[in-house]
Image (tube, rainbow, N blue to C red; front, side, top):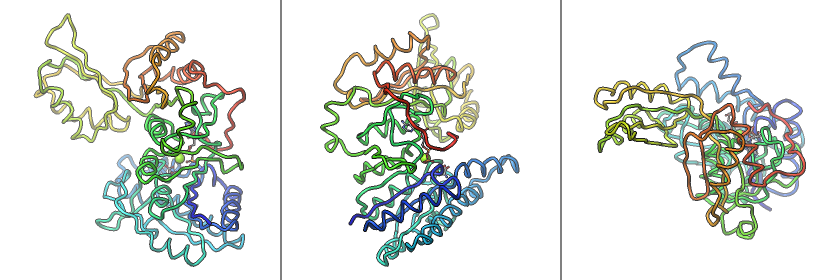
Amino acid sequence: MALIVQKFGGSSVADAEGIKRVARRIAQTKNDGHDVVVVVSAMGDTTDELLDLANEVTSTQPAREMDILLTAGERISMALLAMAVNDLGCEARAYTGQQAGLKTDAKYGKASIVDIVPQRIKETLNEGAIAIVAGFQGVNVENNDVTTLGRGGSDTTAVAFAAALGADVCEIYTDVDGVFSADPRIVSKARQLKVMTYEETLELAAHGAKVLHLRAVEFARRFNVPLHVRSSFSDKEGTWIVDESSSKNRAMEAPIVAGVAHDRSQGKISVVGVPDIPGVAAHIFSVVADADGNIDMIVQNSSLSNPGISNISFTVPVEQMDDVVANLEKAQEELGFNNIQTQSPIGIISIVGEGMRSHTGVSAKLFNALAENSINVEMISTSEIRISVVVDPQKLDDAARALHTAFELDADGEAVVYGGTGR
Ligand code: ADP
Ligand code: ASP
Ligand code: MG
């Protein structure tokens, strides 16, 4: 008998039929003799629809009230799912994030988990029942306000409970058969990966592969929770995400590049005509940090024809652009730059793979493949197992397909997408 945490994403519970289908899988797992804790997302595109509604009602969206609004989606699905499971003869109890003991800091809209006190979940399991927890939500430890963990945060709820309860596995059920070598909605020849390391998955998730929430993978790695990403629409074995030693045999035979990720969520800010003297970059980036800007890539270039002057460009998430630009403009006189140029969104294409640690020629292949498809490279950043480049956002999908082919990742058949709208 195992303790299994099962997380079902919005596309898996998009309608009444979906809820009943998921309920059957939960009941089956329980009837097989396991303890089951379920984490569920809001039905279908409910969260986006609630956001649209808020946009129609007001242009100023107080973060505290937005969190109260958005957590309503998961309350609906957890209650309906618990009722559907009860109908199948298995006792199930639904819990909000607060009732389940998920405590966060005070950052509405992007709260971090500070503690999990899963008392009621443990009692539920001890009494032989199934616990159904609302994903993506918690409670502010300072004042008991409702908080959310950021878009896609139900994955993180699931892994956090799996870690806190010492679960044997955390199963992430979604609308594709597992983690693929690229987003199957963009690259139809994407292939399903059988095993991945936490590091590879972290790099993919951090660079646009929304199949897993970044912080869920960070949690899984820190607490060594095995993740099994799979489809709720089929019984196929999905993708296992484990530590490097457990995936060693695979790593030796694996292709150099495991996957390609694309990202349209970032924008670029260029600070033009900056005096090229020590301390200016430090000053610019403290101004950016004061606006809570989350920088990914930085490029500085000094012009030979204009000595003493340089340009500094960096990327930040699109939604942070306005605040960062406003802060820089306020400090223009002190910083002494000429002007600011922005581009939003930009396209970022990344290749990721453990094999890159030990192989040469990977960058050459990447730049050749992009050049052959007339795709210009604007910025570059690398880690030991990743290369990311900024390209024209219009050409991002083409870039994903070109790199997927160049690194010999194309599958023979087409990847299946079972549901969801890709929103
Ligand atoms: P859920 O509602 O289950 O949380 P998401 O929409 O958040 O599902 O994530 C699943 C989607 O992630 C897939 O439908 C797919 O379009 C997208 N995706 C992006 N990159 C990948 C990848 N490398 N492998 C699998 N899916 C990916
Ligand atoms: N419902 C939330 C969202 O759409 C959380 C999640 O699905 O993981 O972002
Ligand atoms: Mg998701």
